[in-house]
Image 1 (cartoon, rainbow, N blue to C red):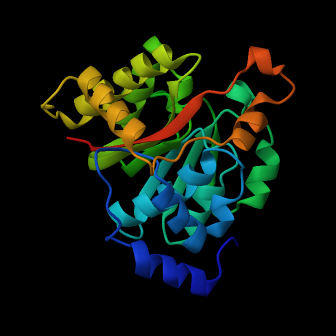
Image 2: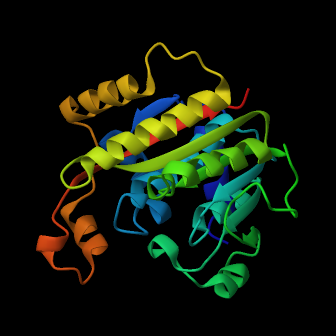
Length: 262
């Protein structure tokens, strides 16, 4: 167990059906500090942006999905969030190939035994997963996954989300986004594509095109002193053994997107 009975009570009391989740937002220091106070085991686990994203995901699902809802996580890696949500009363399915792709883990058997309350499917997320019920999940979510998918593969990912998400269900994602530095243009275009897919899921007639939404979002987070960025220590963790000149620092924030399936 990750959570004591008292921790479960406090989390449900603080966030269940009251935590606000907008269609589009970004990581803030205020929200991170709140997570440090109430979800410290998730806000200090990784040492990078996931220390913001993992607790935010728990709070966002508590705020939007009734207890007992069925959830699907795409590419969980270590399914610590899925386990926490299971302990909070949700039914959670994880789909992850556990093949080391995108620097992800390979410890499939260990995770199955370490996180027994989570149903794990060792597979690449796609529409062709016969063991998963169609149109059955109240929320399909991901944490630091969609930025690794682009072009036709991104379209197929959203096709799969549409396949498994129930009408009225939520497509909820935290997305690592380079705002300045190497690959910023790629991230800007890919985030634009992600938001287009999200809008298409909900059949939202956006007041602005996805590119304009990204432009406005970036303008806001750049001028907001409260924006939570990847730290130097987090960057060094990502760099690993790569020489710094080949992997220089970039300003990276987490973009938060939540849309309801039409």
